[in-house]
Image (tube, rainbow, N blue to C red):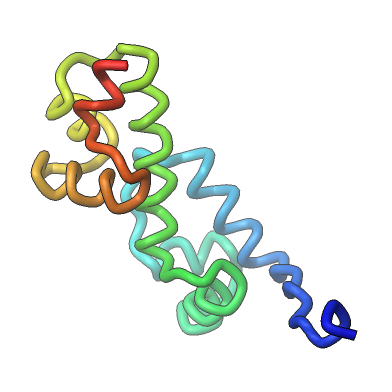
Length: 116
């Protein structure tokens, strides 16, 4: 009965899936929420609500996470130059803020990933 009383994760609507897929395929492209909503063929409010309800984060937070994951892959392979250069390549203009976001997301600093 406990298993039945747990909330069932909702399946994201098509417009949210479309927007997420677009962000994953074009991580370097800086899109506003309005531009992304136009691509998903919904209003900005509907897209924002969909991200909050089905992804649990804002559009910007989701886009940041995608870019952080790609930066982590580059750092782990030892490519892309310095940590600051990898940050810039993935849309982070402030290396310190990139490092803070990175550590919050993965529990290690970008430099630690680079050294491994």
